[in-house]
Length: 563
Image (cartoon, rainbow, N blue to C red; front, side):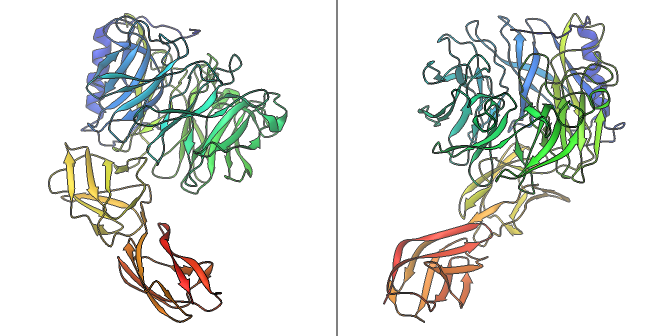
């Protein structure tokens, strides 16, 4: 593996002192004031068989409240492994990759089953594999790539979509073009799209937007003649592929992140060259491909997006106050990159590492906002000067955000009666969960940091809250109560006939339609019943009845006959 990382020289005693110091400045995982939002080192990864080191890519919060990530090297037998770490920096190795598995760059994704998923570039088959790991360290090989139709070299990890399946990309540009794949939880694999020619080289993992499509970035794209400027693409879960925006030197080019969808519905990402200063930009993009340049990086003061080993593994993170945080892996006035913030009003600030490489440098991991409100990240290099030696640090950044409750990524839209998982802290047997202000009557707690609650009858689309004693945690996401129509009666009738429609999640109904014609008169009787008059303007024949709420639109399973 190519590496330009510097290795510090320090002792295990210094690393222990760092952890003790972190415990003083952080109490029970709660957000506390920090100096100018600069990073605070919590743990130094030892370059030894007793620890993993060179941490990269996605960190995730587990159901137990700890965070989990991947060290690409060190450990026993030296091919890296998965670590867990507390909010105060207490770290341990959960799993060491076998000697035949290495180059596990992808970081981790947490599934709706509570297990972790990732990829390794080098595995016994020679083309890479997807693995599953339980929090207890039980390892399962979920899929071995075959090398056919671009099915090889997974640099980026999979993500889990709302349908419960995992989606990801393969390909190590410019050596291989790769593909887009789907993997069911049972391990059934499908190649959805093969990249080739001018349509080549994933530059990021995938992100699922609210429209259900998956979005990512490419190094080489057909819409700009494949000349290496890069583009953003979307692909449906059925494999319908489209490039939606081509980067150029004027907009910023060569994507150094994937895209995320912000609360306002737009996509956000960054590039590493071009734009006004020729060092890339932060941009927003509508799902229809309308581009806006938000900030042009200044190489000396902001550092530069990208890294020194040829992979773009990071994304921006939007925190609960609406601001975006990201990392630049190279350059800057210290030469060690930066952490930066862009507010929703487009005010940009770069935070440099105070004393690189002692406190880390060249960050190469997407920042994670823990439900305690703090941001956490890693650097693959650096460590205290007395380390023996160290290779990478784990740090925190105080954004000033309060603690919150975070919904399972795949469960932001559910029917009444569904079980919804959520992360947080301080949960107890007395915790009250509300969906849009309506309390759940069934809550199951797993420790103090994870619980599931049943979506109650009458639940409203809105924020989810968890109240424990005098503390209320609120989700930054809007939970959508999905409407459902089960039956209606009578099965037929003429214009003006009163039809009773039954189902669930109907309490916020805003529109009732017979075919394409909206009912001018309808009444929400309860969460499970709506009545509506058959509207004028309909021709005789069979039509579908639909009800729209803030949570979506439900269609009747059978058709109503207009006499």
